[in-house]
Length: 124
Image 1 (cartoon, rainbow, N blue to C red):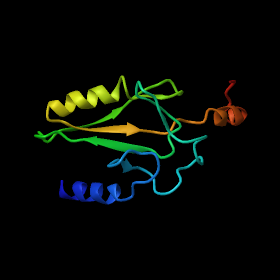
Image 2 (tube, rainbow, N blue to C red):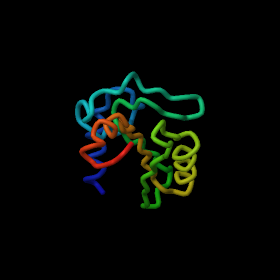
Image 3 (cartoon, rainbow, N blue to C red):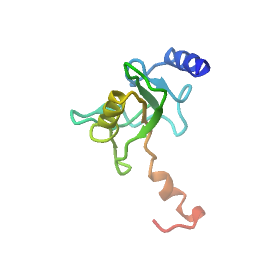
Image 4 (cartoon, one colour):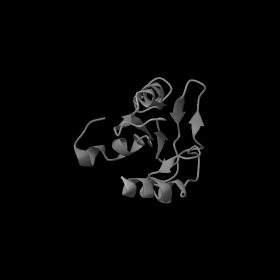
């Protein structure tokens, strides 16, 4: 547990980009696939698009019970639906004493699938 805490503290110091303060960046430097098409966008409803750097948001309860869970929102390859999925779940888990790690990830560039379709023997 002490090693995990130490690793989290180190990663917190690497924070840059559009990730919120205190987030844990998951990739040092520019992630594979290059930069997003623009800066990260967060809607009023909690929808996230154009993630520049994948990261975790740690939701720590006041009285942790020793359990933790990773939350990954869906969104149909168009966006991340954090406002309706992982965000509310993280708040509920936190109230139950469970530490929640909310993943904000980069969405695949679907153009890659189209460009590689023949090599992968698929018909887009």
